[in-house]
Length: 37
Image (cartoon, rainbow, N blue to C red; front, side, top):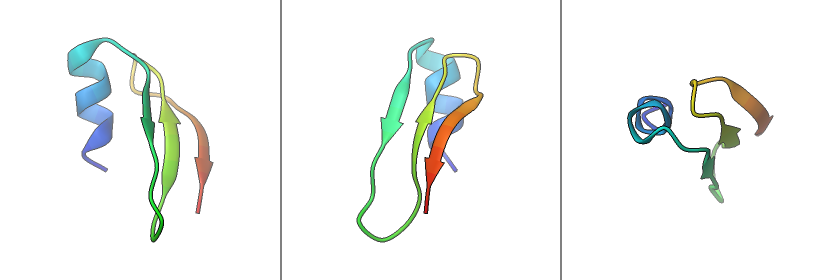
């Protein structure tokens, strides 16, 4: 998941949403807080 390094790089929470795939909330430290398939 390319979103994980982006969250760390920007030092911000990142919300990734997708119609056909994995949606997730990623912390600034790179930890996946919530994941939905």
